[in-house]
Image 1 (cartoon, rainbow, N blue to C red):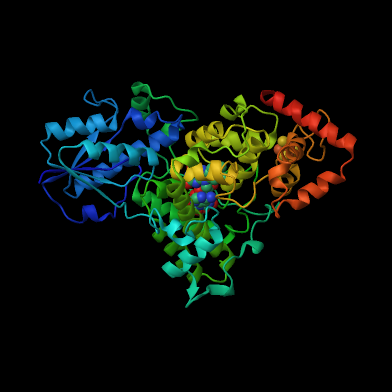
Image 2 (image 1 turned 180 degrees about the horizontal axis):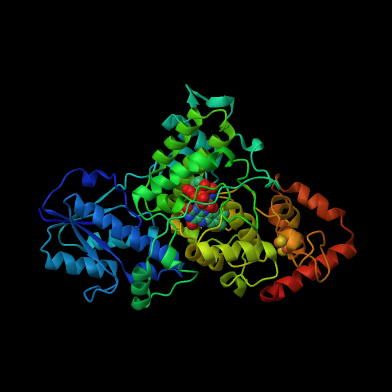
Length: 510
Ligand SMILES: Cc1cc2nc3c(=O)[nH]c(=O)nc-3n(C[C@H](O)[C@H](O)[C@H](O)COP(=O)(O)OP(=O)(O)OC[C@H]3O[C@@H](n4cnc5c(N)ncnc54)[C@H](O)[C@@H]3O)c2cc1C
Ligand code: SF4
């Protein structure tokens, strides 16, 4: 049987069983297509990175004797549509069978299911052999309940995969070491420089521009710094375990004007396009902890393992159980537009200026910047989740819908009404000031709630909670907020709401 096998740009699993043996009857196909460059307003580094990683993957497969077609973005035969290209290739190559790897994104899964339904040749789908849980394992774990607790899912995953377990009990006597983590960066803390790769991708960038695809952010094409091969992905992981893991958990939530990635691994892009697997990342981290127990505490290790074995797999489960409805949810009925400075970082709010500037520069911001700076602001300012989603899906190098939308619409915007998080992640300037040095050089005063130089986060914070009191007050984790709100004098409350209204009416001027 002459078989065509499709590999999508985020399915570059070097260790997939498909490649274990060579077969002259099998041809693999990878495509650079406008359908994929244009479904979001992507950061240039994301498109360059995926194209370069695909190019290297094609090279790897060909070197191992596999037959591979690589359809380039400016090839005159490229229709720029996944299914039209497939039609053309199947017809011209007289293929009698079509196979593909299950996509991670709902829209591609739908597209390929419909396509195969109409195909006149046999077809089948295969697992990507990447994740540690199946698409619907979350549903099996929680049954019909719509409110999932990540912690419960994570414990099940620890037990199932025997990660950091002492028979049936967690190593170190507890499941979660969060209370020992999450400190602000000290003045004397030395932060290792991030490991950057130096590639010249000017040619790829020229081709992308020539195709007409529109991107945002700094392309950094001459000195492109993200990993684009499996070897580089493993190097990045090694760098993390050698230099960053010892303080990963401690400074997981810290933010700084001087450091854009601090002690974070920056492994999400390599993992999301599957050049490296979650199992090998977890194994490497646990092995390093066992090798250097004096330098690496269990709190650092467990904190990191939880992100991958817990949050990453959990978000994928939430996605598959709740799509496509999830993408329409807007619990607070927010309608505002994203301020224009989300696209150029030109705001006087120093925390947002830094978080957005580094996102445009590096296609990266770490978790707390995404959650407690940009996400927190969008939520308090009542931005429509469609706008927020589109921004996050475009700007980050690691943004693929299954993990982007669950984090943005779910964890950050609470637009799902509590499927992902037990309460909205909000804060006033106090938290931002405690966890960063942003406020020290800001045009606004982090201590003030009202007045022209008062930090907008403060009035927006109280205004948000007052606006949504009816639904939020019932939440036992939020009760304290209303006790504090009720202690404010009526005059102060009125001024706070006035300041918040001004901020919302003048978002572009903040
Ligand atoms: C609003 C918002 C949007 C986000 N969008 C994305 C996205 O598009 N793609 C993406 O991969 N992550 C996303 N995240 C999760 C997280 O911020 C990134 O995974 C992380 O910042 C990637 O950097 P890192 O590899 O240095 O992570 P580290 O801090 O070193 O963490 C290690 C790994 O843990 C995993 N991880 C950590 N937190 C999460 C989480 N909440 N959900 C899923 N995996 C997690 C990631 O794979 C990450 O690489 C988002 C978070 C928020 C709050
Ligand atoms: S004062 Fe407000 S706007 Fe300025 S950095 Fe602090 S939290 Fe951000």
